[in-house]
Amino acid sequence: MEPRRSIEATGETIQAAIDKGLAELGAAPHEVIVEVLEEPSRGVFGLGAREAKVRLQLLITRPTAPPPAPPAPPHPAAQPQQSKRREERPPRPPRAERPQQQQKSAPSNEAYMEGHEDDSLPLPDTGEEIAESEITEEVRVAREVLSELLTKMSVEGHIAVRRIESTRENDRERDSAPWLLNITGRDLNALIGRRGETLASLQYITRLIASRQLQRRANVIIDVDGYKSRRSQMLRGLALRMADQVIEQKRSIALEPMPPHERRIIHLTLREHAEVTTRSVGEGDARKVTIVPK
Image (cartoon, rainbow, N blue to C red):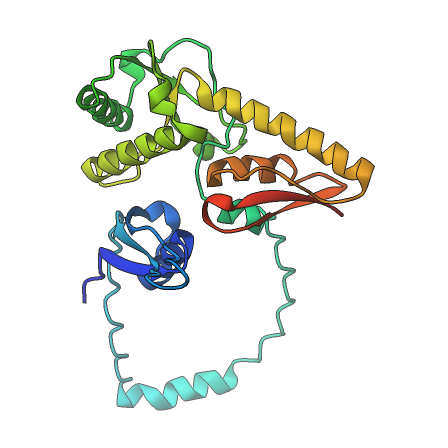
């Protein structure tokens, strides 16, 4: 039976619906395209409440394993000889148990649950653009999609392509670092929106369309005049300052509500901190990070 390539799932939150769909497909987050069909709503006094609804489209087709072939019956004449050989063979000494290899520590659940966005990486706000000869098909398709979206929005801007420097040591992971498409021009604040919500939607749509054309995940980040880079640096500084304040006052401090990728920056900045830890509290747009003393 051919595995399903798409599925619709519901849940109390969008993340819960995505997790449910991933479990039914048996897929990892990077193997699917997520389309939000309905936002969750609490209704009025409990009336008219509805769950979040998402559609997950599988990008990678897994080959189905053929059924195992039945074992061939042994030749009747060879059975006594094989039994005799088994009896004559001396028993093997027990094998020494090998110590289990120590697995690398996975990122904290809080940082994982805040979304698998690459926006938490240090983004370059300056530097030379990538030469046209070095641009891959993935970036070319994403740039064309983004350019067409800007045209339909009657926005004039230049799309600069840069490669994000990865801090990972593995060559394969370093080569898979995302690309940055930075839009520059005049009067582009409307593309950013309140708390970067418009920019996040523009990136989501660009990734969705480009991923469908490529039939794989488009690993690109969309920025406007280096907004995400400046915001990322500001959030890291805020996290460290608030951690010092938590240590000094010996009490928890809650930050302002933030979108998922910004909360993830706070979690990752303080993940290795010796004296504080972080957790997310609240629901929906009111979800915020709380810094707690250890």
